[in-house]
Picture 1 (cartoon, one colour):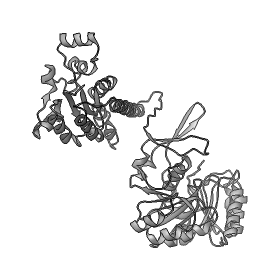
Picture 2 (cartoon, helix red, strand yellow):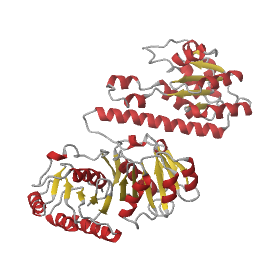
Picture 3 (cartoon, one colour):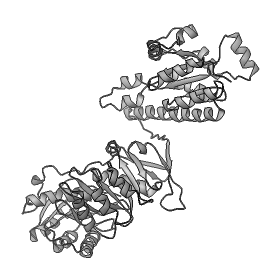
Picture 4 (cartoon, rainbow, N blue to C red):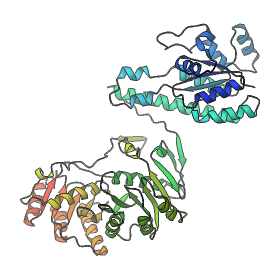
Length: 512
């Protein structure tokens, strides 16, 4: 059926004027409310105010304006139902065939740092979701648009189909409405849930971002939900898998710890080499790669600067699964795109926002929700956190800061040997801390790297002195750790016996 009458009421007016003009050219009568009606009129578009249409004024400072039988009756009446037709005729309720609505900006409002509860409540849209749901329920006859990106498609279909849209389009638009209203209600519920002091619930409603190639293994299906594409853009290569997304997340968190030009190599979410340089990223690459020349095969590389061609040429010599950068020089991108399976990911400036989002993990029968851990803690005022007779030198302090930032992103039990601008050896994910120490030492030997004069970072306390002693015997002259063991005094004594410097950060960074 041809669209004769449309109701427009939007907060986001992007593209509205062109859409409304197109509807007017097709002879569609426009109804509107408040600010939307004024916006259209001021731009020369003929529009009828909903209050004039219903014969009922807006009430309570605009809280009640579209909650009226003439609005919802126009949306919900079935065009092929004789009783509906009789009711509509008796009560003089014309059909409304197109609804264009986007909602009060509740999410943007509550994202403000100092938002008040009253301000949030006033930005809860009532009429908008009600009309969207009425129209979406009756999508067999009513076209409902909740996203400005759909204006062009709807207008073109109307031009091609005698002012009508196809049923498949109306079905898709109705689905988008229920996705939108579900997310909107979830945002409201989540905000109010944080405000209350009674028992809380956890709600989660996210749109499908993409189907992933597979999960941990090819026989496991996997999907990605949420706004991943607001943070990362795939520029080239195969579709992402579940493990790719985990690696990207880990890499972003790690590189965000550093301000100097830095490059990190990761494998299975663990750093296997990190290097910083003053300018030339090839130098940072060399430091990271030398830490472990075997593990990077099929791994992930991330940098915190634009990818230059000089670096692209060097790293393209080894097989890499994913390369991440804030941007790629055109010639660097062209060079890397010669490898058809290599995934190139642009890390947008917004990516750092995601690092503060709560961490959600599945649990038997439910989920666990944990605060994010976006920054390495305990690095301020290290000079006053010394526990040994010998204080660290200036170089050792810088090496401590570097190594501690890396250790935070290594799976526990984590041990990192490092200098002020590079990792030298990494031991990850062992059941005992001394085994992580031994693995790191062995890896350094395999790489031909000396640990003499290095600093060792431990993501959690040394429960016994054996791990620290093994590190000292390998050449480490200083250590940074959280402290907190019942045997701290034994560990400190072991450090003093070996003239090691050691600081306690007072903060643990376990990563499971």
